[in-house]
Image (cartoon, rainbow over all chains, first blue to last red; front, side, top):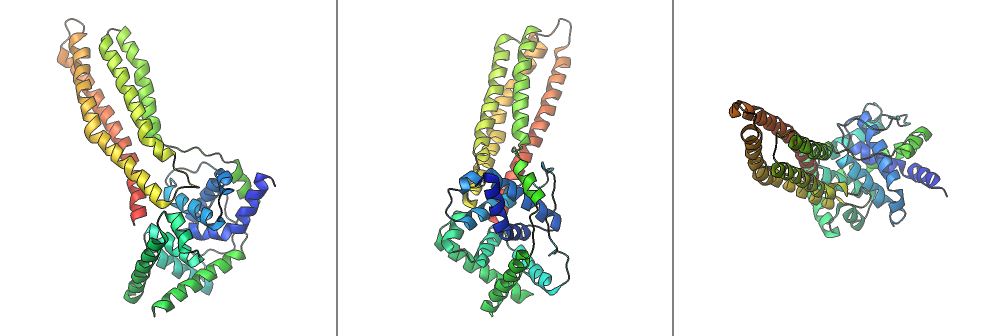
Length: 160
Length: 191
């Protein structure tokens, strides 16, 4: 399979994971768009190293989170902006599903970047080992951090 | 109660995933644009340092041939600029080597902390140690040792000082631009 075809297939298969990470680190639709495109560029640039990875989800999370963290947001994009093909706008739509998603976005958005990443991967159903591999910490440490995050989320909920 | 909160979050996450599954999200055009992109990392501070060092190394011999500066001072200036370029390369290398595909958050944080520490060391220790003696020497060379006869040396000292101040301010601007970028990343990682 040609590299282009492989990349296309990979992106189409994992588009929702990429979108989820970008959405949780953005304040509006335009920022999601920017981050999504930036993540795809970084994935494309590292497609060779990906072939060596064992876990697709770990690799995608790593690239997406590093992109969200390190991208030079204030700088002008170097590639033409191409809008995402979406019928929904989780930031603006009024239906019940969008409202639920927005509530999740608000809850997670209150956390720091590392905690946000941890919770997202936990919700995604990744194992502590996989989360640790992305974050550069031990599985045990992941457990401790998640416990603390749950406590702070619980407190935030009771304060609401 | 606690489990209910997280159950609710899991449900909300499932709704998000379900909604996204129904979406196309990625168009062919977006994929084509992505695969066309060959983005190079922009680092204005590093580029500025290299440009300044290159210009100074090229201009210094001119000052020597026009008898504005002596040979020893010209060589010392070239060596100083070369040292600055090498130091810039050394400080920026780990940041340039950060790999989006391989490095975890802990590595990114470590590299950024080291980058900031090196920049601070350069500003507070290296720059005064190298810059102040060089400036005094430059004033002596330009305004006193090689000044045309009949010209007040203090009158020639002022442009050197003004040039140094302007250079210092530009340097400070780029210094804090780089350091603040590193600080922002560290602050985000540390929450």
